[in-house]
Structures are given as structure tokens and as C-alpha cells.
Image: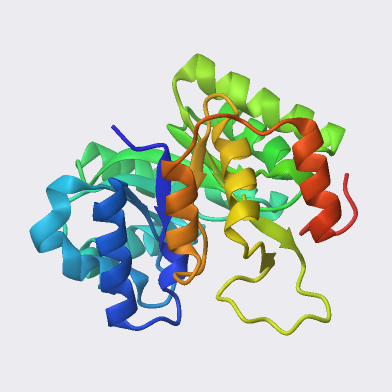
Length: 276
């Protein structure tokens, strides 16, 4: 069983091993038992692997493959097992499967889908998921779920995206399908404020995040307050304590009025340009 809060291993990109160890200590402190990482996250798999000898039994462990063809995906899965120092992965995910051309390669003959199914048959992985970004990803996940019975999906969702009617409807349709199949819906970008713009980046996130604890509380509590969703934390270890603290104190979902005030106060905007 996975905790509702998932540790996003992207936060370990460009950080030190000491920072990574502190992140593990926070996960243990707050009882978070799900780690989500990927080969593209720098040394994240290696940092996490150094914890696994002692802590493997405590965590639901997920990684990804961004490869699109069978052989290269098969090799990457085995490389991830070595880097993570484990015999099996709980969840392998097709990483960022959003472009139709990529989708055709991944899902077609000789594609990555064949490699992850083989890995599951060999008991190297237990579950298979798919991830992605952008305004069209909910629609693409619907297409993926029609092609294969995935165990999990991952996509962005926050209050600003929720305000976009078309995305909201597509997202909720994915949630409905996943509920029928007992598949997990994982969310990312919950604390996104908007693109960096003219503000110099000072965080390990490609977007400008909210920083104040009170603001983070509201967006985290809003997300957790939505039915049947998992919260993937944040791509910055410096903000990780605030997100975990907010999640641990969840009591109620903020109202639309409260969230509207938050959006206006922080001038929050879409990460993906003009909406659908």
C-alpha cells in the first residue's frame, strides 16, 4: 500500500548525497513510504539505491523509462535495478509519453510496452504506469488506458489547471476510468505558482513554486482534498519539508473562495502557456 503522499525523486537532481540522506530522514519522519524516481533525474537512482540495503522493505519503489523501443527499454530497466540495488521495482512507468509520435513507437510492435510487460512476467516489476506533462496529457492518458490496462497514471493537476474547464473534464474522465480499474492517479505540480518569467530561478524546479508555508498548505490541502488522488511532493529538497509538513496537517479542503484569493495574491498562472 502506498501513502497518499509520494516522494518525487526529481528533487535529488543536482543535489549532494548529504541532501539526499536528509530527504530520506524526512520521509521516515513523516511516514511517506512511496519513492518515485527516474534515470533522467541525475544521480537520484544512485542516491536512493544507497538507502535500499537497509530500507527496501519500508518503501514502495517506482522508477521510469523514457526509452521508446523494446531493446533499449529492457536495458534501461536492468540498469535501474542495478543503480537502485534492488531485485525488483514496484512500479515501472513509461516516462513522459505525451507526443503522438512517441506514443506510436512505445505502444507499437517492438516498443517499450513489450519490454515492461516482459519485465513484469519476469517479476522484475510488479506494476506498470504511464506519465506525462502538458494540456493534452489527460487526453493522451485516456488513449493509453484504451490501449493497455495500466496500473497507474501520473499527470499535472493544481487549482489553476482545475479552472480550465476542458482540462478539468479530461482529467476527471481519467480519474473515473482509473477508479473503475482500480488504477492510481498520481499528480504533480501542486505547488506551482507559474513560469519563472523574469524572476531568476532559485529552486531546483523548472517552474516558479510557491514558497510561503501558508500558501503551500492551501494548495497541498486542496489537492489532497480531491477524491482518489495521490500527491507527488516537489522537485526541490529545500521545499520538501514544507510540502510534507502541509500534507501531515491536512484537515479540510480549502474553499473556492480561499483558493481564488490565493491565486490572485500570488498572481498564479498556467505552466503550459495558454490553456486548451
